[in-house]
Length: 324
Image 1 (cartoon, helix red, strand yellow):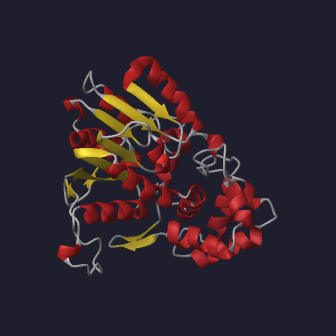
Image 2 (cartoon, rainbow, N blue to C red):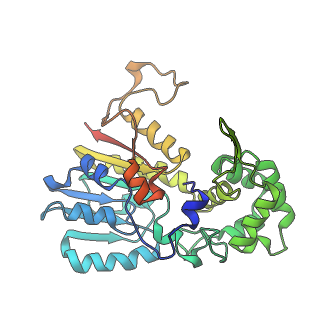
């Protein structure tokens, strides 16, 4: 998820969670008809609450690896009792969930507002904090440890492939040179290193030169975060597991925040629907298994009013598939 400087710095002092594409996702899931649903990315619980409040007999099983999300889930358990169950784990471990045959599954990929707005988590360069970036800050290596110890090829994958940074050579070179200096240990100093390496040059438009709204460090921060949390691999595993756990007629919904996530979702859903996954997919039609039906060909995006209320919804893309 790439945020402009205004979105990063404006009006977000207090951690406030606003669920993205809430009404649109409910339209796809239809929880008012009752049933059992899986929220694979509990976060602040916005989508879970919306599902639970649509019908008195609906049940939600929620998953999140973030220890802070587990604390918020305790409040839901007190409020909704047996209608709500929480698993503290990565959504790639979905097969460990005891419940099954879901009427609907929802994934809201990316960071929650709580994670972005928590200074000590080290996800954002809005605050000066240890460069952590772990979704589960009780295990795994921090972003700082990754930057200090990763091989050059691993850094290239993080910055070029996951961050989609065009100036990746300069950024990777600067990281390697900064090792052992302490620059890679905190969010502000790391962001400053990138800004000095690839200063924002802006872009040309019909009205002349305009400064870029995206901070030069944004893409690299994204790439490093994806790398240390193994986010893309987890998404692939979770989507396949979730579709297997759906009832016939059940719906799988995924909300993505950048092109890498959305590409994985789009190709998986097209595969389920028996369609070519991409333009170079030369598999014959009679070789394809049709297991699902895409609810819509194009991704659903946030309206202007939602974007104005929640700037982080600007890059959101929602897709859904129904199991046949």
